[in-house]
Image (cartoon, rainbow, N blue to C red; front, side):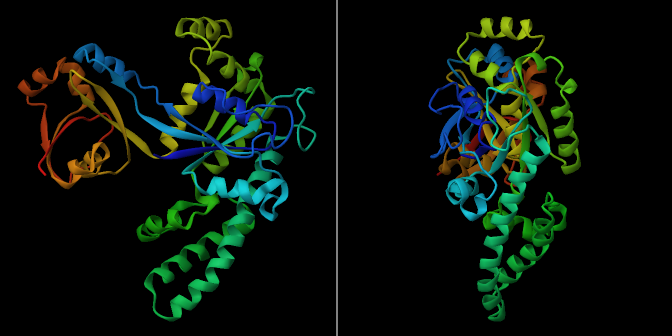
Length: 366
């Protein structure tokens, strides 16, 4: 299961947000640095209105949404790459996740201390980026010595890895977001295996006060963060972690009433989950029957056999065909039976690249 790691400086609201995301209270939240040391993790369900629509047509016994894992990682501080604030341990935890959710404090509150004093989103963002870049530089320098020896012996993999490192280093030196278009297709395949922190996909979470939710663009800190994110080509989700933590304890009806009272139409947590899901490069296909309707997350670009293997390895090993109906065709037809009669069900083979929203039955034989 893919993981999104929640990072940021101490006291920016990471653990409070994590509690809201996972609707649990397993992450301690307190007003002092390094409250979180060992990372907490929790599985989150991905909100998808298409499941409810399919259920209204199929009347299944249960509905199972797609899910992925969030990891709450302790706050990084300046000097983490040199071991400050247990930094090496925290950086190792970031290395294990697939995408980074960077929480940035965008509210003023004298009752909640900031590790660097004044509130400054750009400085906070820069602090995290510098520590990730320094950690990557150290890792690359250690790796390149070994790779040079292997290159002299004619190791083709070493040649590719050296090329990747040489392309990455100028960005690390300037602490800039790495342009993934500079890599060849072969390099893009190998790049994740090198576990550079700076190449992991990242989005920003602007954590604001309750009163600012209805019109966050009036918040100068949010404006600053959005400008920075636009320059880097990264998404921003505005959220009030404290409000979301309170919402997590309410019923659906109570949540809607509370959000309406704040002048907000949707939960920031739902927006963040969807944004993190997209950041991980995930799409969704569906299986729909009387016993179960289920959303299955898959990496964009996956073939039908690979997606079948997500259900069970036997499905991929013995893959024959995929019976596919596009989500819109399924809904317009009103049922699988009607879709078949209209000729909207397609038989797809091993080369078929699955599309988001495909409703599928896999044929297999083992």
